[in-house]
Length: 352
Image (tube, rainbow, N blue to C red):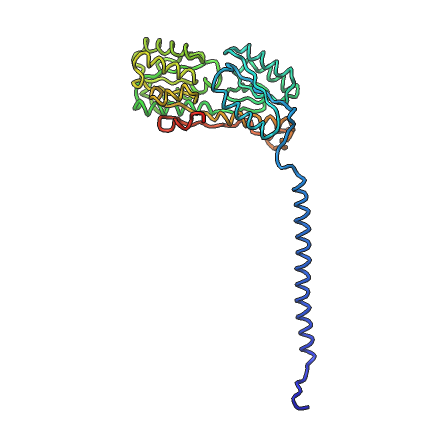
């Protein structure tokens, strides 16, 4: 018939096939969407049910044990300990020997152990005397970590503090720069305390290796006391007037030496490298009596000490290849850092 366009079966079959493919694709996409939505929902439910972070019990008490408890030096460490406790919802307590006396610190540590705390962070007055008490606590199931000053042969789980040998090396390089690579120096330290021994060794070894024209006239014990360090510095200068620089391995030592230099009228003419950032030290840096002091990562010591104790108490450590028992994967040593403080940056280190 005129005007009629014939219809071919092949065209219908092709159209139906094309429509089927399109419908199939839409159906597949729809099923994929439904699956993905349900998967996301399941995962979200699981995430919603998981804890938002570490959380303890306010009844759990962690104890920090120090010596010479009146030192300003401990304050920032305690602040780090407290900040970690606040975040973890646990309690903390600070106990310390009032004097520089190993027997008194042992007594304080034994008293802390008797109260069966969730964990103890302790700074060792020397590397040996506290070992039996530390081992006793660990054997009783009380986690112990060391901070600032260690006891390597004890059963404590870890040490958190300054790489003290490296700190002494940095002090030597600063001394060498300020003295122009030559002269005589003296060190006032606490020779029976491990961290001070390491600082002294780092200082001595670096001078020998990098500044062979700088000699060490004397290494003396300031006993961690301002008055004794002042007296000791004056005696050293009486015996060795050629000494052009002092390195104090501890805060009170630097303040005592600084006072001696002022009394003798040579402040600013003798180089003085101190340690730590208590207000007395910072004031002497600011007025030029102390040329530089080394700032430790003290807040880090306190904060990460509590974090490690919390993980041990709650057995949150994961099995690790480094331990044959598969029970200890927390780092046994954490270097909390060191910074050189001079007049150029001293204002940043005053308590805000």
